[in-house]
Image (cartoon, rainbow, N blue to C red):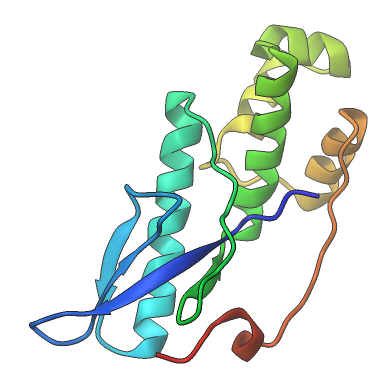
Length: 150
């Protein structure tokens, strides 16, 4: 099972607040003043970094285990689902036309499904992932379980 939540380090900043970095996704760097702002900014930075990787055809790293004091930041659901499809396409070495042929759908729909900025409906993403041998598993956690106190 592939999880799309990554450990983040919150380092106190000299100017106040915290600088947020991700050991597994070094291009995702942000900052925030309050704990809530840090978590929101971390989620946004992680989202944009993974979207950038999808758009440039780069690998999406596996998350490393969180260390003591790390926060575990989940990728927004839409991006996680599209990343899962993107990874399967890369694993199978399909191009968009080959994926469309495999799925029996129009290549334009494949482009929209793989576009992290295009809002796709969850039932359709779930159906497409199922057709490539994947399924969506949803978990709901208390926020206190996802993050460690600063």
